[in-house]
Length: 148
Image (cartoon, rainbow, N blue to C red):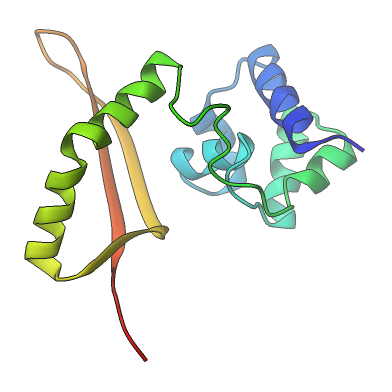
């Protein structure tokens, strides 16, 4: 049986071999490119139908299709502080602006958190004459702290 890491590596390889974009795979799966990419990289659980659609498109073996349906170990970066330069910039963003996010969310909504479970994300390219920009819109449900 393949491990989830084996499946991730196979997905990345097959996507490159077949010259498929994440968006094209997402269309076949029936989800957003953001969610589908996260699922295929081991961070979300696919339904049987979604896993089978991805499996057909990427020519995955049956045990890989099964692994796509297993609840993953989320947040599985290889180190506590990311070393990949792009991922590190998100770590840096939270290090610099995390207290700002927290203060403004608490001022606007009260004491609570923004959910990463009830969550949407949209990543787009924003044309700019000084160099294209990455635009990421994140929307998480506000969950107030409650005492019962």
